[in-house]
Length: 164
Figure 1 (cartoon, rainbow, N blue to C red):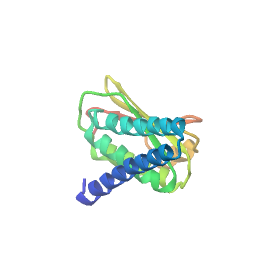
Figure 2 (figure 1 turned 30 degrees about the vertical axis):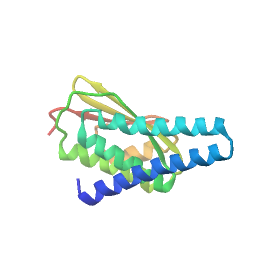
Figure 3 (figure 1 turned 45 degrees about the vertical axis):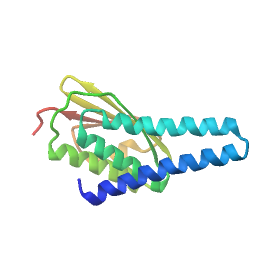
Figure 4 (figure 1 turned 120 degrees about the vertical axis):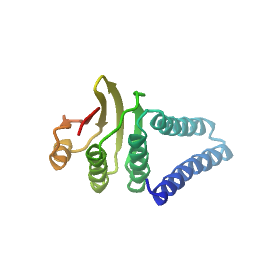
């Protein structure tokens, strides 16, 4: 992780949080209490999503997903995370590169949409499922990896322990 990347991620997270607070304050000043409550719920969801990433047990995956989430906001791609904790294991450079390439393809698509990324532990590793309305077949073809599977609304990346 480069220092500049870490600072950019922190800036993005602070910006998101400050934006939530400004919207909530504005709604309260206008007397729109119910809308302010809805905004508070959205803010709590964003914060919980980021917190889950930090607790997933795979620091490199957490970093890449938080970076992806922050970069997505710049183009209107909202990324929500729902990650199950897993016992830590080392990822290979090839696995990390696969995640980077996947995220870059999704960012380069320029689509304004919402994605849910779920993480699930399994005995030999960890699955990341990307759910949303995108052309997953095209993404899978570009990634060209046996670790990638796709369906009509999902892309799955299998991160296996002990992979070379």
